[in-house]
Image (tube, rainbow, N blue to C red; front, side, top):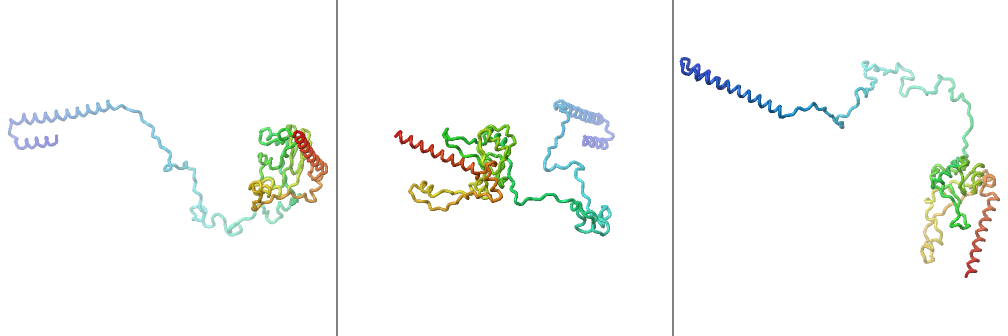
Length: 326
């Protein structure tokens, strides 16, 4: 359109007197205006068509995902600490808030919290009470009610005779209580003491071997047909009881011969399980008392001898019956 207008202006300037060319120029300008209007109409029609074909959508919310690149604390969550000794603008310059000289202005300053200006401290004015027994033996308390609960859960076996025979099963020891989860082996430093809490729930006749036992616990267990024996364990014997894996390879020569099958011992190195030491003199009255059911009490030892003799007599009777049938 600009080029056509320039050509028209040049033509007008070149032929000012040509009257015949006036209709031509008029027709050219008319055609130019018509083409311009047609192009504008076409463009408006195209715009209207595109707007009609493209549906309008509501504005969508912009979602920002939380990533390591844009994660940050909330505004005001972090407050820069005041740096001391950085001039008066920080309000903690020069002496850094400690003042001039003195004990509190030095490095490692201050006094003990219990300092009272030089007078006798409170913890020194209070009297002393009691003492710590360096020879004391701390026992782990276990109640008879707890033992019954573990029996009901099936985590602790009840010693009973094998296959209905007269032979009695070995009693429950400290290791059985530890294996059941009543306590752990690291807590047992000197032994376990049996207490009578929960004795109204006890109904299983159990046989126990523990370090100590209260009178109520003994009465409760014996009332349901069980028995209690207090046994002394020194530190080494207690370790051998609770952790027998530390003493592996405790086989005798006869066991080696049976395993080899040739009657000749293996000759290997063997670890020996330590035996229980006898109680020290200060504990001897406890373990020789029948009221405490001590294993060294004459009544307890006599009962054990009778049980052994009964087993031997039963075994002899069985042998006689076998010989008679043969």
